[in-house]
Image 1 (cartoon, rainbow, N blue to C red):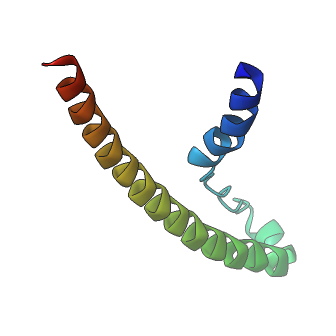
Image 2 (cartoon, rainbow, N blue to C red):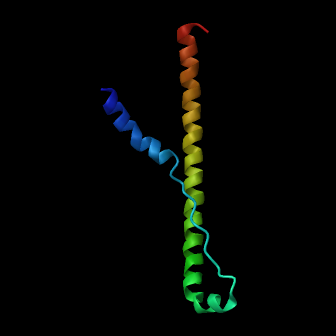
Image 3 (tube, rainbow, N blue to C red):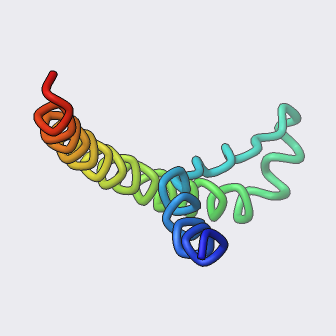
Amino acid sequence: MHAMALLILVPVACLANSCLAPVRPFVPSDSHAARDYADIIRRDFDVYITDIQDHFRCLEQERARAFEEAREVSQDYGRFLELVGD
């Protein structure tokens, strides 16, 4: 029974901290290489900008989820203290 409970909780635990920041685009310091790979570098920046916006949304959603969880846990703790007479 305990194993099933753990299996159910594992996906939730994995989701809690899944807001991974995107990797910064690489810009070569050599201007010749930068010109040679300009299209790829521009595309990397476009992808980064889209990904960082998704990252910010994910962080905001995680913040809201954690805040709600903390509120619920606080209420649970209040009920627990009432049960034990504290």
